[in-house]
Length: 365
Image (cartoon, rainbow, N blue to C red; front, side, top):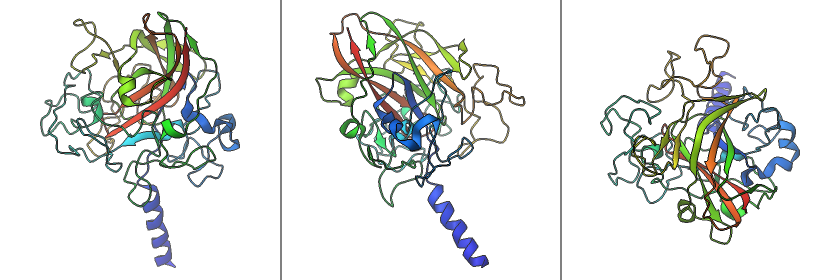
């Protein structure tokens, strides 16, 4: 009997350990990646367990894209499971396996360009590109240069089958999509009437089920063109004003913001440039290389009242900051042609070789 229990425990570890806990996603405008929101398993803020049965809770670490949308429902379904993993800077493709290898996965020798400690989100004060700079190959350290599987993400993030790799997600197959599907190929438009005026400033909202630091951008691709990374790169949206946090009671807090040049080499406002990227403003717990340290300290100061030892611990920090949403103000270009567009969200992580991408439908008039 003892042997049976030991084997059962080993099987459980082998099944569960490779998988992530769900990560980043757009909340507003409503995304294509929330396609499963109409299914009973995902309605009214519910999520299934990895086996597809009801019962996921916020304390269950391997299920659910838990999030906050102020006092409104946060209906994101499996949006946090659409991503790319095994993607390091300068490489032609992702390997679909290596999330935490902390190495140059294609041996191309590209160096990190995000070296300013104020823009880094882990191991911030080590010498850039040194041996101790273990995160130097991950996407955020040269924003936009790491490859992705798809501009709208891959369901589950990694390879399908036995060679799934540590870091892939428990994507629950549904009538809408299955593990390994590419978002741009299978996700239908989510036309909910989001309309923006040229030259206007718009508020966008995103959240994290689990934090990997780094930074992100929003971009546009006309629906008349092929939905590719090259198309998205043509029209990154410039940030305006400052970031803010949205809490579950509907309150809003403006927070310090750091915007990054399109090539990742400096902080906007310190010299002329186009601020195409924003640093993730939510600090994780201090990492030891393989996981959180036991000290309970943050990589940088939390942007809200988040006492390490108090009742607000983890409100806007740590690995599971899903009790707040991050709001950004972006400028819709005055010169952009009117028409229907796909808005893309790309989050380049620093802790891991992973990139989360989400797509939403908007009309520009």
